Image 1 (cartoon, helix red, strand yellow):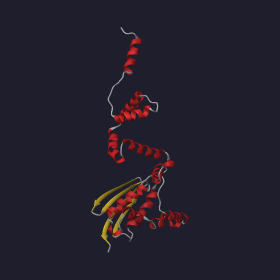
Image 2 (cartoon, helix red, strand yellow):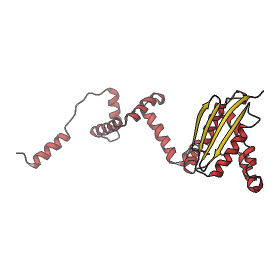
Image 3 (cartoon, one colour):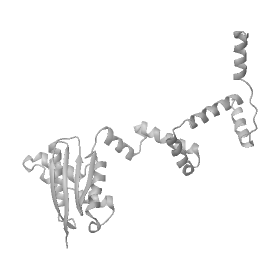
Image 4 (spheres, helix red, strand yellow):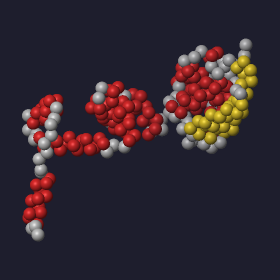
Amino acid sequence: MASKKDSSEEKQGADTSPIYVKVSSETREIINKYKDEGKTISYIIAEAIEIYNNIKSLSPEIAGTIEKYKEKYGNETKLIENAIRLLDKQENLERSEDIDLWCRARDELQMMLIGKTTFNQLLTAAESPEESLDKPMKRNIALGVILWVTGKPINDLSLDEIINAIKKMWIVANYFYFIDIRKIANDEYHVIFKHHENKRYSNYWLGYYKEFFLSDELPFKCHVEGQALDETLSLTIKKLYAKK
């Protein structure tokens, strides 16, 4: 029977048993590079195997993403470098780009993007309560925003394009966290807007969208019906006919 000492020595010997492999000249150059820095071959191999194991342990989704983008960035190393820089910007606000700061401020601080015209009209309404929110509803830049997003002249826009542009920008601006568009019939849509505010907030946007869809600036005549609830706004918009 082998003693504990013999077993320990046998195990230690197995742990440090030599491995002989042929390597390419390129691999040999890499080994020599790190040997010159005082690293032993066994240390280099152990580190390389650990890194290899970590990469192979990645989920299929992440491995697929690396495979998808590595050619675009040149190789896996450059891809990982870019990913780490992006992570660093995300974790350190002072290093973030302006657009990243806005996205985080919107999500984490619940900030809203508001046009100067609307903001000034809200200030006016606050100073003149008797006018309530009529001016902010009527004097807004909704059409300008929609034209900017779509990149099309107003006469080339369909009702579908206008409603989907509203969905895109009003969520980006953080006025609503969810907008659902359902086509009821040809040129008739039911739109649900969800937010975390109150009924007064819903009433404001109900008036805002009614003013917009009934505006003379649109190339077609619309019929609009809506209901304002505590955290929901419901709109039904129907195109009646094209204006001449």
